[in-house]
Amino acid sequence: MQQFLDTTLGGLVLGAVYAAFALALCLIWRSTRIVNFAQAAMAMVTTYIALSLLNADVPYWLAFVAALAAGFGLGAVIERVIIRPVEGKAELNAVILTLGLFMVLHGLTAITFGVQHRGFPAPVSTNAIAVGDTSIGITPFGILTIVVVAVVMAGLVVLFRFTDLGLRMRAAAFNGEVSRLLGVRVGRMLTLGWALAAAVGAVAGMLIAGGDLVNPAFMDPFVIYGFIAAVLGGLDSPLGSVIGGLILGLSLSYVTGYVGEHLAPLVALGILMVVLLVRPSGLFAAAAARRV
Image (cartoon, rainbow, N blue to C red; front, top):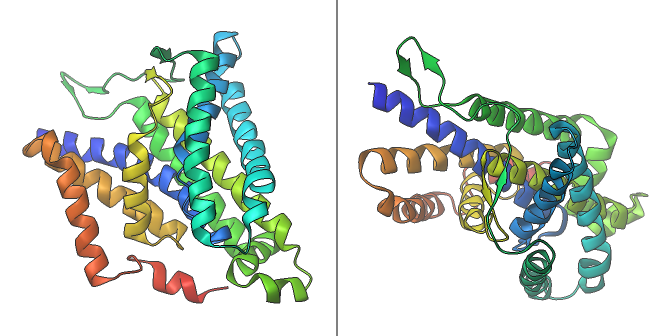
């Protein structure tokens, strides 16, 4: 029973991390119908910016906000300078650009900061919580991770469902030409979508790095698992991305805890294949695709 509890709690934390990364992918897909393969590299860059500030004795939460601001600005610049020129052309062009951007950001970060592993602090303890003489399989930082992802998710729900700005962003993504006729500044909405996605990616990077070692490749594994989580829930659905992340995190945690870590990639692929066979657009994509 103790192992099941520990495995479940660990899976929830892992799922929250996947959910944060999947949310970033979802936001860009909703805005531009592009799968952003540079998302992990963008998050890595903002994490290194935060680490530089932390090494200069800047308080953690101030560095956290700075990472979000850097991510927001980086996303906006990338959309305007790199993605905007290929808008309206073959979607494959933009995908190839994001792959190229992935390599460029990796190279620049390695040149600037080096490739060695560096310790990244956490704002709270990363040791397992003790209850009496027994420790449970979650840390204070793990609880913080779940709370932060829940807050981000709630903020996005409020933005897209209950604000005029969110309505404009959804309309621009749904049909840019009609939205322009209705007075929506589509270009600005697309830039904002990339900026928000990069900021959410910065949150994911900070949560993944906390209490661990980082190097320019530390975010790379999350490209695959974050993409699987987003597809499971539906690339159009922020809520689906979160649920997909939790499903994936719990599944991989159970497999790792009871069978072995070596089977985790196969299980992730198997879950993805089953969901796509049953609902090709993802678990929550249909309802989201009809809403504008």
